[in-house]
Length: 279
Image (cartoon, rainbow, N blue to C red; front, side, top):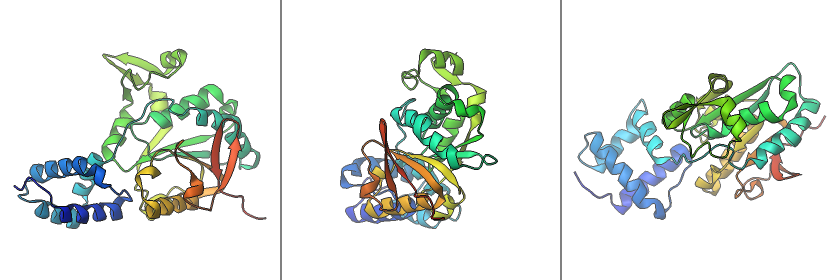
C-alpha cells in the first residue's frame, strides 16, 4: 500500500468532502487528514488511496463516508461553556418569545452541533434551575450532529470530571451519579433531549426541523468557508420561526455571514434574530 497521498489526491478529496459536508480542510490540516485517510485505506483492505476513494465516492449506502466523517470532525466541549448565552436565553430571549408564541405549541430549541451532549444538557439544566417559565411552557430540546458516533456518546450521558468541572456543586449532586471515574447523567435529563443526525450542508436534512424558536450553532461555522457558511446560515434561517433567535460562538459574527438576520444586543450577549413577518 502506498504510504503517501499525493497533492492532487488530497486536493480531489478535499473538494469532495467539502461538497458533502461544507467543511473545507486548509493545508495546515494536511497531516491530520492524511493520517486518518491512510488509516481507512488500510482498515478497508484497499491497496491505494485511489481504490479507497472510488469506494468512498460510489458506495450506495454512504457507510464509509459517514465513518470517515466521524473521524474527521472535532468534538471538544464541556458543560456550561459560554454560559452567558444560557443566561441570556432565560432572562431575555425566552421572555420575548413567550409574548407572541402560541401556548398550544412547544417552544423548540435546537443545538447544532450537539457534540457529546454537554451543550443541550447544560441548556436543560439551566431551564430547570433558572427559568420560571418551564412550569408554564412545553419545551422541546433537539440536538443534532453530523457524527453518528458522537450522537451515541451523547445519548449515553457519561462524562469525565473535566467535562463537568464548571457545573454548580448542587446541580452536580442533583443530576449526576458517580460511576467509577466518570459521572452518569440522570435518566430524566437524558430523555429530555432528542438527538438526531443532521448534515447542515444538506438542505433537505435541515428542512425537517421547521419551525425552530431558538438555535444554538456555536463554533461550527468557523470550519466552513464563506460560501458554505452563507448557505448554512440561509438553511437555518429557513427553518426558524418568525422572530426566532440564533446564538453563535463568541468568535463568530452573523454580520460577516448573511444580511438576513437582525442583530440583537441583550445584557451580556449579542445574538441574532429572524425578523418578524409583516402583518
